[in-house]
Image (cartoon, rainbow, N blue to C red; front, side, top):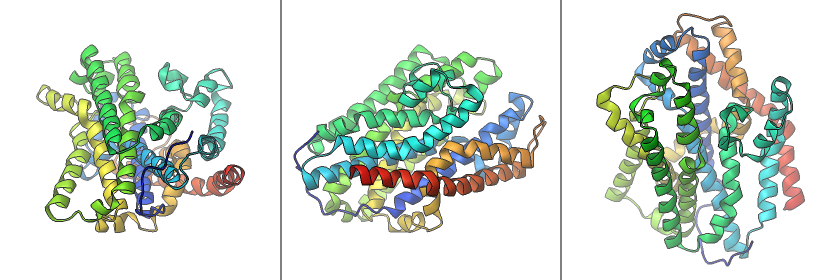
Length: 405
């Protein structure tokens, strides 16, 4: 696939330390979320988990929406992949689809295949594994996902299938704006259709449905409003839009200041905080149903737009203070090991649960125990990520680059 080099840029360099920091925060959010979420399996009832969840101090309240770390990953992925492809098109007038897919294969599959093989010790090697390899498992029954939390990898792989085509379509700012608006409307329209067809998904929280034994409705929510590609596609596309803007309008972004900058920061804060008005793991009162319905329609779109805008401003040096924080050296190795941490962190959550809680059902869990579980999960994942990076991931990446350029 080749396209003319229509854009010119002298924008920021490819080295993006601040975006490594954002990736590190995203994986820490996900591990904090799962460290809390998996505790429901050691409590005797859903009501006990609700009581524990509602007892968390406000400073830890964000962990109940720590799954938004995945949203950050998707926006980052759209940004970074598009950045590289746009740059190659500008420099050489073409992009190599073969090279793109080879690099993605050697980045993702060596470690992912090991994770699947480890899972096969429990589930066995069956035809279900084919769906997990080819990333169509999220379109079928949830039980077909061998490693449940890798649904996001399936979404990512589906985006890889179309991103070269999207790069080809984007010829200028107008086509990019149309594409971004179309996918944003797709996300909102899809969500509206699902909620109109299944209104109970907006009238009850996930914890309400679980306490009522409405497991089919919970499955509907996750399948159609959580893992479905139409819900997630706008996140990648907004990341793509951010990359194009930074590459082609870097001079404009660098001049942003004063009232304009304050207004953009306000928009980012509003978009980033909108999903926080919805806590799916507490009882939903009737007075809040309208707010939750609004968030279910627009929350992910607003959050993705906010993250894409923030990434663009960070990369164009418009938010220097935030950039310095995200560029802390402590965050860099966490970002580097984030893929391994994502694949294997539940193993270390289990280790944390055994260490601080035990294997038997317990009536209550303290905040201290949760913090202990989370700490073990993070430190264990980082250590294991260090090993897999140097033994598996880095050699595979280098082989792919050597072989395919």
